[in-house]
Image 1: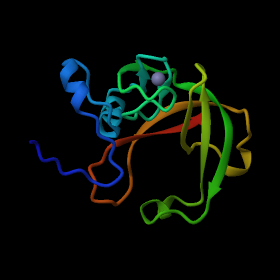
Image 2: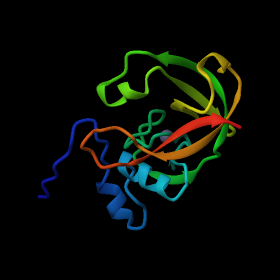
Image 3: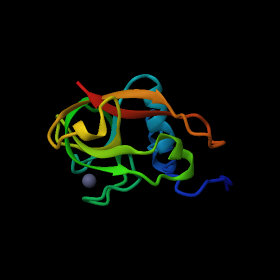
Length: 152
Ligand SMILES: [Zn+2]
């Protein structure tokens, strides 16, 4: 029996991924590690084809646990957004900032921070492109690279 220390809100999926051998685990950590290589990868359900972003251990459509990594386009358009004035402590230094839902070119929606544009110039439907940056929070958490969206 393996004992794993799992922080709260951590998505872990190790059992079947290990059984399959080659596939990296479908975790948030792996999701961020892929970003270190400049890749946006989602977990694609092998049964119904639904792409989950960030990856999750169970398909929300068909409840399958079989996934494969799939590379996603890094361009899309803004579906909706909100401006955050009162942020969690680790992001308070960046407030106010905008967080939006971006629809990628393949139709997958992804949440993310919007940077590189004045808040009053953000428009629904504007084209955005993904960019990667190192997390600048002061949290004592490993500095996972993060992504954000910026105007094209
Ligand atoms: Zn599915």
